[in-house]
Length: 507
Image (cartoon, rainbow, N blue to C red; front, side, top):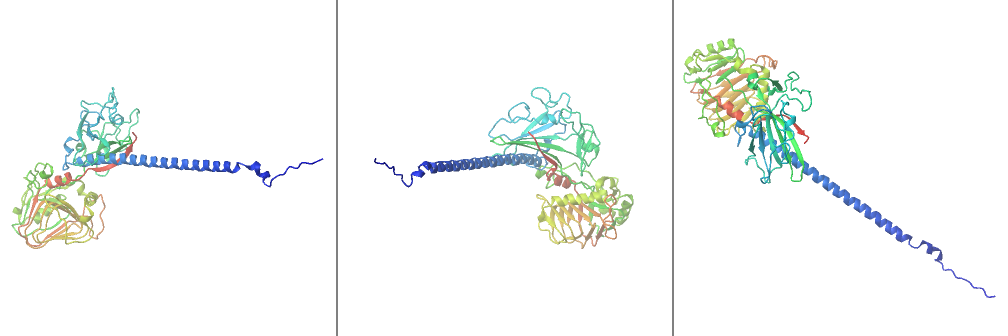
């Protein structure tokens, strides 16, 4: 019987594995595709996140730009100044708000329509102090009729393309009551009146129920709240709120003030030397009117200002050899001398003088700050463009030196030749001035001399009186010190409002 044999090939055992490699390849391809898709998604997410962050930052800096424009335009000397239109009424009263508008391409921009769609100011009602009937109705609005005024952004500050801020609201700060609650926020921990206006004392905020900060103290200044909304074309929104107050310099009460007890005043021997306390503040001043500053009404002062009654008597004796050289306000005698302790205000203490030194130093640019002694001030300023210069050591001005603005010398000031200066010369520190020779020259403004140290060279207590101020005048000449209060006003008007607080608001 014949047998039939079936032949098996060598690879017949592997036929069952057919297609595994294909499945592995497909799986790997799917895995690579998934990883690639994930990477693409992650990249897109990162791109979107970066774009959103960039857009948010654009809105943030746009809001800061709007705030800075309003802050700078608040000063009297600014281009398109807002100073004359700053609110004097409180938020919730008639004309208690000024809106500065910055629409893009003539778009609608109506923040006062609080239930509208054209960038409504939904924040304002939470800040109104008289919460009763204020912010009632539809749309909700604060009290007063009209409760706001408007102006537009200035072309002098404009960027291209237009910045993304839409409006800045300016209003006086009050000791406000939080919306919807009975809790009261107080700025000083003392005053609980929600309608009390907030003032800047020079060091901190305080609240007063009086009608103005100046009624609380002639040295107090109102605090303004600047609220700015920015919205980018992509829809990112940011709101910045700051508190700002004017940067002011004190008006010195006379042409020549020796601020301290027991002054040493070695008066010049020349009849031609004069100190004139009749105020030259007027529309004819070189700097003020040309820079949009209104000079104050002239207020005549004594030629020599003393720290107290005893120092006033000393100065009168020192100047008695040439009484006709010292003229001033009616009733100040001949020579014209007066006790200016009350008029000096904070400058009657070491701490107040230190604060003035710190303020002036902070306002001077690094290029105009001389750390140590100097006999050369490279940019002394002009009447049309005054400059703040600070010398931390001794300073010498000589020859035909001319300058304008503020010159602060913390060491000894030596004067010779025929220098001329317009503005304020502050010799605060060593409190020592030396005038050599009989040259001419005119100071149009004020010269204040104050010593912050005792006879051992130690800094005096901040709450106490200054030390002994000294002026040694060698020779005579035709030198003149002429009082001009407009320089103090003009310099203050040229300084931007200072920010005392800043925060970002939820919108």
